[in-house]
Amino acid sequence: MVPYSVSSAAQQGSGASIVECLFYRLALLRSLKSVFAAALLATLAGAGYVAWYVSSPVTVAALPAEFEIAAGSRFRVAAQAIENAGIAVGAWRFELLARALERAGDIKAGSYELTAAPTPLELLDKLTRGDVTQAELKVIEGWTFRQMRAALDAHPAVRHDSLGLPAEALLQRLGAAETHPEGVFFPDTYLFSKGASDLRILRRAHAAMRRHLEAEWQQRSANLPYRTPYEALVMASIVEKETGRATERERIGGVLVNRLRRGMLLQVDPSVIYGLGEAFDGNLKKAHLLADGPYNTYTRAGLPPTPIALPGLAALRAALHPAASDALYYVARGDGTSEFSRTLEEHNRAVRKYQLNGAR
Image (cartoon, rainbow, N blue to C red; front, top):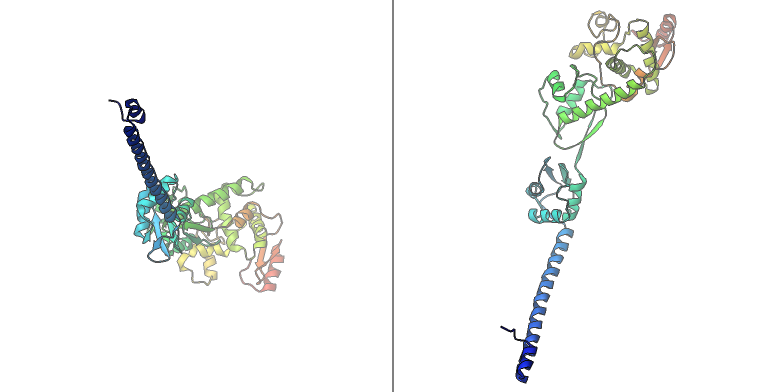
């Protein structure tokens, strides 16, 4: 069958047929233009909707709004979590946007907070940047582990996975080689997303202490009286508690190292106080100094069995890079500084001058 065309009509020699053919062709062209125009309008309308969607702030039920993206979440699950938090992002449209931009696999887990209504594109940027809500825990130099754990247990943004765990079991959960928790966590300010596990924070603090201790141990001064890095950590904790002014840490470390080298008793009050534990009422008595115990450095030579606090980096350096001197004694002057002496006679004069009972 031959299609109806101008050429076939011409071949038939019919003028009327040619005119009919031309009118048919014109109608067909008009029809095609209408279809194209409709498609173009639909495309433009769709593009306009997309432009409106990505650039219009979403409706938020209440500000600030918080939501959590769990680790390993698929984008669809994350989008639904956002919707469930009262953020009307349009979960399926939001997912289409992320997939169109090839960013659906780039979102970061964590806790998020919105203080203003974002556009979907701004929200997607926030998720892919990992702009999570940051909480912080400040661990102070010189704290005991008991104080650090109390701060963790009381922190409202922490997930308390270690609550009630004995210290030894806790260290096992962390994969730590130590059997005593004192001194093995680095004091610092730790930032974390809301809902982070306390075990994760402790693991970071433990790794930080190992890293700093190892670095200082590798660069330590020669001929120090420590057999292991752990012994240096014990000394650093004593330096931390004994130092009244930061500029004197190395000198305090030098005195304690000199005494340890000579086999002299360290005679440091903070170690005795640590050994007393919760029984200490803030008043150190002579009876406490005479009562023998593993942490009594007035009755036992050498270092105590464990650190007595969480030493900071400066204390680690002071223990491993002590000031070179021949001083064997120091006494607090009462203004945060210390008077250093080479002999017991000099020291006794300094004690009388500053009238501090039991000073060294």
